[in-house]
Length: 200
Image: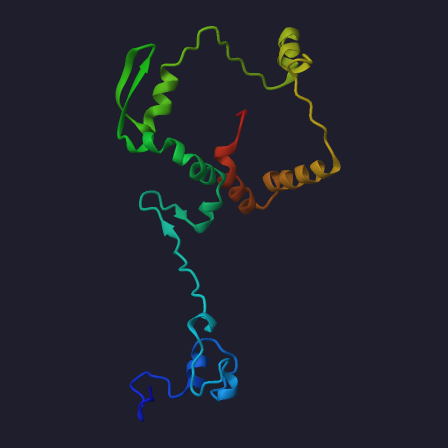
């Protein structure tokens, strides 16, 4: 079909302008420039490059209660990444609303929100025969305790320390014990929930 003599509002005035609007660096409307050699034939939809739209960047949010600012870095938090991994497994528990906890066929708790489930299970766990002790150093331990927890070849864990590990340890030591507070705060926030066997 023939093009109108006067372009409509917002319509490109030539195929040259049309090509430039879709990201073409140079455009030629002559018959020689088309693959089929048909005069005035425009490029096919497959050949038109569409400029990718940048994703929308969500602004940082400030919690209304304690003024804590949630930044996009929260998605890199190890705890959040782990939750995203295990959520499909615990989804039914989370969406169930309240739960009934039983033990040996006996009901020990009812109408328990999923957020209170760990505490409920902990309060009703069997700790018979378990003796918890805390020592600030090996020198405070009795000889039998030291052997059972540290020296027994069947129980102890020995790690090989290499130069690469020493460098990483030195970097973490400087982060946690250095004079610069901000890196230490960021490290604690990112890894606090991943700590195992914390002695405080």
